[in-house]
Image (cartoon, rainbow, N blue to C red; front, side, top):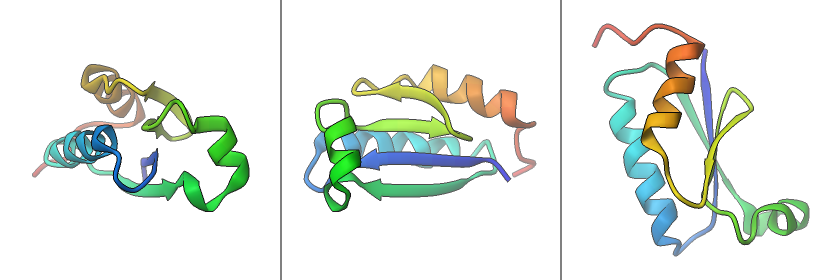
Length: 85
């Protein structure tokens, strides 16, 4: 199954927008969402502190900072056909 990972942190308004967009895409595509709080991992915090949210589709980076719904959708389409919902 396709996996979407959101690297985020609490109280991040851009991260909230990312969650909303990913949620909206779930009405068209079937995928699992895994959200990672970078504040709980020093390495991730160092890597992504200034870049969140970072969204991966099957480990391929879709976007960071500025959410590009079109790019996320493109990677989801590449991963598999839309769901039949």
